Amino acid sequence: MRFENKADVLLGLQWGDEGKGKIVDVLTPRYQLVARFQGGPNAGHTLEFENKKFILHTIPSGIFHDGCQNVIGNGVVLDPFIFKQEVESLGIGMPQLKKNLFISGKAHLILPSHRLLDAAYECSRGKQKIGSTLKGIGPAYTDKIARCGMRLAETLSPAFREKYQERKNAHMKLARNLGYNIEELRLEEMDFEAYEAAWFKGLETIWSLTQIESEIFVNQALDDGLKMLAEGAQGTQLDIDFGSYPFVTSSSTIAAGACTGLGLAPSRIGEVYGILKAYCTRVGSGPFPTELFDEEGDRLRNSGNEFGSTTGRPRRCGWLDLPALKYAVMLNGVTKLIMTKVDVLNGMKNFKVCTAYEYGDQRVDYLPSDYDPDKLKPILQTMEGWDCDLKDFKTIQELPAPLQEYLNLIEAHVGLPMEIVSTGPDRTHTLFNQ
Ligand code: GDP
Ligand code: IMO
Ligand code: MG
Image (cartoon, rainbow, N blue to C red; front, side, top):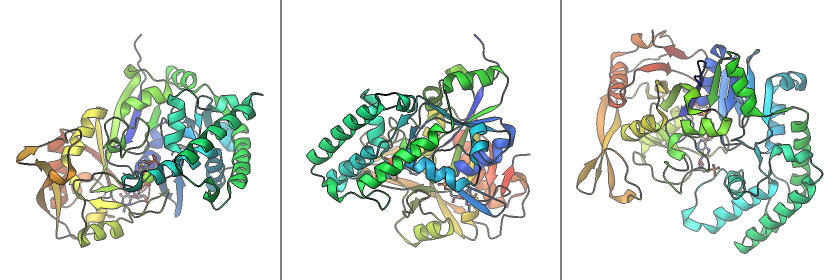
């Protein structure tokens, strides 16, 4: 069977927070369907327009455009408590949401006791903490893979409460065995019972929306000729297989994840938009070859407002890592490159970019599995900066010469042209390749 109409995919090429939410919002007028395929409320996607700012965690970033249907796919893990809060923060009425937000019955639920377990695991890891967002992502996906998770569709079954209690007891036991004092746990400023009650209220909000068989829904939409964009969360370097394991998230963040997380055949994938920031950031633990520990890192953090959208944690900052970028382009089969936050480099006399690594006495252009971060040094090239505001530029071609040079270097390294350059957080701060 040949598929003429294909779904495009948009995802992050670094460690998350590349500006996916903003770019999905910018591209949505070209699409009639936007779908999330993995992750859950560990994501924080920021959208700014008309002097308003929204942070989305589970809901796709096409939600603010009339005429765009939004799908939460089977690959997503859903927390009813956070979902209800998110719905209430949008300022979109429930009748409207019922019309343009569709949730897969196969999406797995994050139970309150999954969050408890996330905290217990982090606590037990001591110095080897992952730096999880503590939203229960790892334990929810663990249950899914262990075939004892709970899917949204089964919450309406008479057996639901019993299974819920059984999972909760199992999680509590595990947490105690890890030495975690479960009486101490507070979730969202509440004790466990109060949080649990709020979680069940959240489930009622989900029940009032439209549940679907999302794999049938999206394939039918494509058959009907609708244009569809699959929106990734986290970033390629946090992928469960190809990220810096174990300092990763628990899902497939790469383009292949759009196939399993939505029920799309590989031959149904069209363009793959890969987003990179003009420098790198990482939240949580794990290796970060180009990390800056000095005032240059502080400068990037402050100018780029690099504080987590979900947790408020300061993000670690460093120079752009071209070998890691090239690896991500390969894994995802990126066809279109997008760069955000170039304005954060405004006014820097010089800045740097990593072109390869020195590992022991060798020069390498990829990270070997299980490499020793202490033996790895980035090889840095110094770039000339520019000293002007970028807000008045209308196309990529007009940008200042040193910035063009930076773009050329990146394009030559990964073998793709830059399609979009973002020069600010607002929808309007977006330049296209003419
Ligand atoms: P996401 O998780 O990939 O959607 O990214 P986040 O929303 O977590 O983080 C990106 C942050 O950068 C948000 O605060 C955005 O509003 C902001 N942002 C996006 N693009 C740009 C840009 O081009 N310039 C600046 N200065 N900020 C941007
Ligand atoms: P968006 O979609 C940045 C990081 C966490 C931690 C690791 C595992 O906004 O780009 P988890 O909660 O999944 O167990 O955390 O992954 N992480 C993110 N970092 N942006 C995100 O999402 C992230 N989601 C998870 O900080 O290091
Ligand atoms: Mg984010």
